[in-house]
Structures are given as structure tokens and as C-alpha cells.
Length: 276
Ligand SMILES: C[S@@+](CC[C@H](N)C(=O)[O-])C[C@H]1O[C@@H](n2cnc3c(N)ncnc32)[C@H](O)[C@@H]1O
View 1 (cartoon, rainbow, N blue to C red):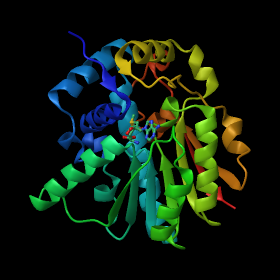
View 2 (cartoon, rainbow, N blue to C red):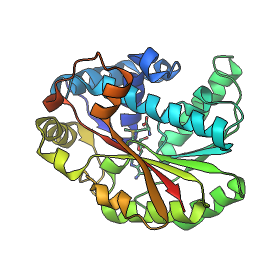
View 3 (cartoon, rainbow, N blue to C red):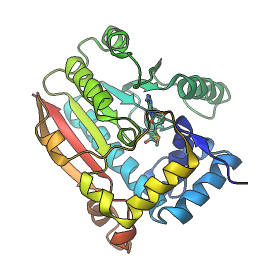
View 4 (tube, rainbow, N blue to C red):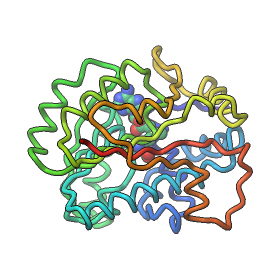
């Protein structure tokens, strides 16, 4: 029988994708997360939505990993704050000087915290400076989370990452998130965000994703997938858009020899912004 998964469990599937080509993703710890059940789901997803999804997710991880590593070395970045972190493993892939705040839904954070502590105790993972914080972006969470983050962050220079999340939340909750980012960040800080642009809705791959999500995701009553126009980023108050990539441009950059059937690619867009 086909099993559905909850929204936070999509993080197992993205980890599974990253584990499929670690030379590209560089996420050598991603294999720790998938379970037999989420692997079955991943197989259905790849068959029914797009065969290019593992490749696309490896590219996405690699792009942010390289970008954040470069900023850490060249510009003395102190901290990565990952909103909707899921089971991504940046704390163990980036220079160990970097501090981390990992934020996700309570069930995802409780599970990640327990597993990381276990793997650190058993020598599978090294120690890192990580604070785990719970927040559900569909609720009234912002003031409490802001106070907690500012208490840890102080004036440290940070990169905020929002990767693989905006599809699941609506525009009102998105505006609350970006307002919070503006309040947390100082001039010169960076923000990385991932979303599908509106025009991708017309592509056959996105139509398949929307149908698959409707059928196989146990979403909350509020779920209605979101796409985000480029101008949301180019006109974001207090930020300057520094870089705009997408799956196809990153493929050409990192693996030019890889042949992609563009019509079958879920062309996700990545934006890097700098606080002014
Ligand atoms: C597809 S996963 C991506 C995880 C991770 N960022 C990555 O790229 O591997 C989506 C993540 O968004 C989180 N998420 C979705 N809706 C959320 C909400 N309302 N509040 C907090 N986290 C949410 C999920 O729990 C999940 O970890």
C-alpha cells in the first residue's frame, strides 16, 4: 500500500536525495537519515514527479555549502541560522569555527537533536556549536523566536538560510518570516532563499509535483503550495539581491557534461541577498 508522509518528513527525502551523489552534494552524512519507509516514498517521488530531483537537490546543497564556506573564509562569517533546517548537515560540512542555530517544527527538531547527540556520543559525528530551536511558521511564533535568536546571536555576522520551505507555507507566513530576518540581521549579513517562481507552475514537472503533494502529503489544512515571483526578492526592503541561480544554471556550472531534459526538471530558484 502507498504510504503518505507528513510535511516534516519531506526532510528525510531531501537527505536521501543528497546521499545519492555525495561527490556532488558533498553531504557525506546524509545517508544517516533515510528510513526504509522514506526510501520507498523517495522512489515513488522520483518516478512520479521527476527523475532529476536527486541531482537537483545535490546541486542545491553544493551551491549553498560552497557559498557559505567562501563567506566564512573570506568575510569572517560567524553563524549560520537555518530556518526549516530539516535534516541538512551543514554544521558538519562547514568550517568548525562557524556556530549554528537550527530551526524547524517541534517534532523535526526533537528528532534531529536526539539523533545528532546519539551520533556524537558514538563518534559518528564530531562536536559542533549548535543550538536547536522549535518553531512552527504557521503559528504566532515570531516574537519569542526573535528574542531567543538575538540572545544567542548578539552582533555576530550571520547567514540566514531558507531552503525547501517556501513551497509549504503561504504568503502571509512568508512575509512574517522575511520581516523577522530583517530584524535579526545587520548590514553586511547574508540571506539565502529557495523557491519556485510563478512561471514554473506551467511546467509538466511542477504539475506532477503539485499532484503528488496533493495525493501523498499529509499536510495541514493551511497547505496550498506557494510559488514566489523574482520581484519579491529584487524589491525586498533593506536587502540587495546579489545572486540568482536555478537548477539548470547550477547544472551548467557544476556538471556541464550532465545531460538534462529541461522540460522534466523542477527548476527551483536560489537567491542570495545582502542586508543593506
Ligand atoms: C523539504 S524539507 C527541507 C529541509 C532542509 N531545509 C533541506 O533543504 O534539506 C522542508 C522542511 O521545512 C520544514 N517546514 C515546513 N513547514 C514548516 C513550518 N510551518 N514551520 C517550520 N518548519 C516547516 C519541514 O519541517 C521540513 O524540515
